[in-house]
Image (cartoon, rainbow, N blue to C red; front, side, top):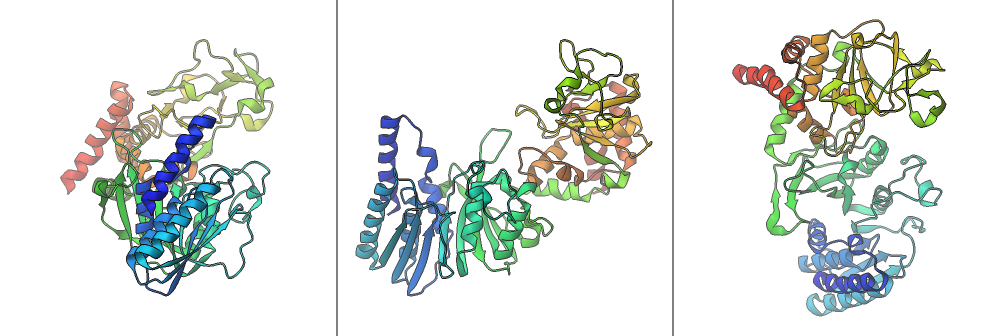
Length: 494
């Protein structure tokens, strides 16, 4: 059934590509992914089951689900509901489902009752008795159009802007699960930790619990995971003891899929914000355990993390190319390079600002600066630089909005060895790997940054002293120093 649906879909893709010169293949679930999602369902023996494909396309997921239920046996009747409102897909969807219906009857003696609802799943009326035993969803991975009806749905879960359609599909579908019903969904890996989706995750894990996670690896890239993952969920608030993890290459071919060690539910699903801890190998577990063993945090040292003050587009009339009277230096992200701050940069405009309002200036103090959106080519998720107040003879400075800065409170000041030790530690490979484990977002936000465990002040100053002695602050050298000061000593203690 699945192979038949996939073959017909490929014909449609070739036809549309030739006729309309559009690339539509990326909208359809690949065969191995569909098989993986359907096989994640634990089929129960009952006279009739209800199955939903919430964005059916040409019926690939629907065919996979019916085939899995039929092969499991013990079911006499399948009520299959497919939502699809794209007229380009409807003829093939109906053709595929008719073939699936006949094959199920002929090969397995199972009756399949098909309902195709030609409407938007999100905007459709879902009566109280619309409940499903099995739901499979590979939703559109895009934002709801600004001002659309979809953007206004579930305001208690999603903010008024930047509503993620894939998460919205899952939120609506979760409400339609029958008691003990199961759902297999495709979601972006970033949804596991995104702060903006914390309310979505919290609601999802109030209605369902997580049973399994599939991650898809990329080889020889800085980002080891594909952008999407598969989650297997079950209706009900009471979770199992552990969550199963699987890692696959490609899109889930069985021979390239391996099981990892299952992890305790409370460790995977954070009770505070329902964020997910996604580990892909035992080495990551060692990094996680070591980082969590560190005794301090930013709060320990009374350090605060702030967002840079000046958004250029909001104050263009205040920007200056030269240090005119009343202007203060505006530190841009481009000023950060290999752990140091270079100011001014030759030939760069808008490096000074006349702070017409107090909120655009800050005391000239020792700071640790971090790019909020580092380039994809950057070696580390955190691109840091240490700024020393004595390098510029100004009472005040300003920081660009695309920077975060770490500062001591009030009139307190981070001493240089401590500051450079903090730079070295946050630039190390261990911290980089830790961040990639606990945060799947493209950018590290202030909340995630504040949660990073830190060594003691004595250890940080020892790291900083070594870096300052040679005046080299590149990430690779920082990593060498951190390993010699922390990991070597930790190994000796062990």
